Length: 465
Image 1: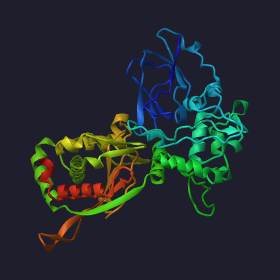
Image 2: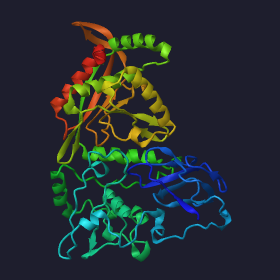
Image 3: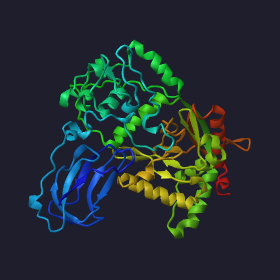
Image 4: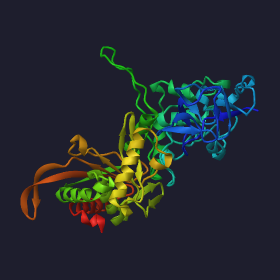
């Protein structure tokens, strides 16, 4: 009997994916472990392997199909010896009648709906503390594009018929669901209805929302501001419209969330790179036979990791009513991609040798650009580093990657006047700016970290001790 191959969950927070490419065709025989498709998640393009042997009888979802819900049948696999011409596509259920498969059975409550008290006609519905959304739990790492759905809103005392995804989108954009007309079965509000809602239907500006917002802020999680309404590009200017990749969508959402909910403060130090550059040359000469070449960025990753190890109060994460303190330093390093940004992680960077960091960074960056990173290689990290020095950028302020508590922005090393041993000289100077989450890290703690980083860069032998 033929079995369904369904869209897999390739990361802990994956809800939908794009079927980027089929690696097999109908009639092909597969064995366990054979690659059958490439699937683009919210972070990377990953390979989907066959689990059981059989023959690909029918391909149900074509290449390039976007936002295929996890669990949606994408192909039929016939058993050995089974006539593939007799295999039929599965019948559509109520769950697939709505756009892109996000809806559940209409009367199946979400966990939030089960916890919510029955609505009362005489009272206004309560709003839950949305917190960080996908990153509210300390163990959560990356992924997850929208804040969690709150209790189902009510209209005239009755619960609205709305899918969880549509409700999460409405919460993120500040859409009043009571004014949205549903196009799904029995008038259910689905994703497309919310996305097509007019900007004037935003509920964030309503006067009655001030009190719930203050209540949420008191719990350490300010409510996200409604997303701005975007219009078509000016018709008189030549242009083309390019669809955002999943990576770009997630990057946009996460960084918008960070700037709206995280109180950033910034500290900048200038570092004399001459000693670090000299040490790099000496180490590279000794590593030449091993085929390893250290970059300046490798030494900076090590310096940040050791500085965080020395100042553990900066290696923290804000988590609502809790502060998470990490005993290990995992540095997320920003890597630019064709369609966005990703941050592969050097784990336990303070304890690793520079040659190990160099080899890992080269491998991670290469596979990141090819979209071949595993979820555990880019989800997590206790702090981040972003280096734009190779572009000649003198100084910049990076946006914190939530739920992390800080990110270090590295500028270019350039010849500048600099005081060395009480004498003004020309030195290779680099500006480094730390962005800190003021809910988790105080100004003095941030300054202590920046001072430790500067000392390690200017006296790099301390990193090797």
